[in-house]
Image 1: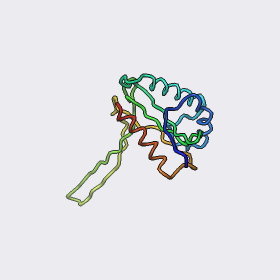
Image 2: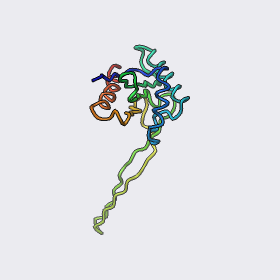
Image 3: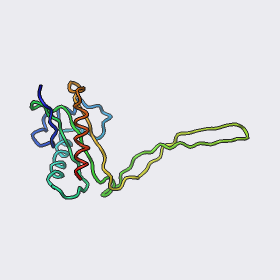
Image 4: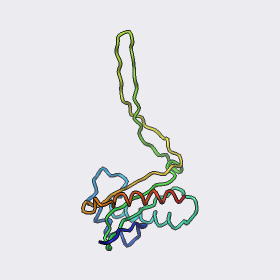
Length: 152
């Protein structure tokens, strides 16, 4: 049985990653959707890894999982959200109204646009090829990005 390794993505991975894009669900917004965007993501990641032990700025660390020369998955981390440009997300909040006199209680979920993140890191893309799912590969890839965060 061969061993899967997790490593930083590099320029030589571009062809396999472009092929992988075609199998990614359209709802995965953190996965580059074109060859050009993937090449830019790789360059940004190489720059981030090239910084060495300097504190991360607005970086993207892009990892791949490889087994026997074949890429089986990707994962990424985005650092310092909201520092260079605003980072917006949504928060669901529950509003509750009570009328004891009438014995009525009503709850409503509300969606708010928020800008809560200033310097935090985000776990981005996590994609495993369907044929490679199971056997702990996804867990390995996810833990690898957490270990990368722990280094800082």
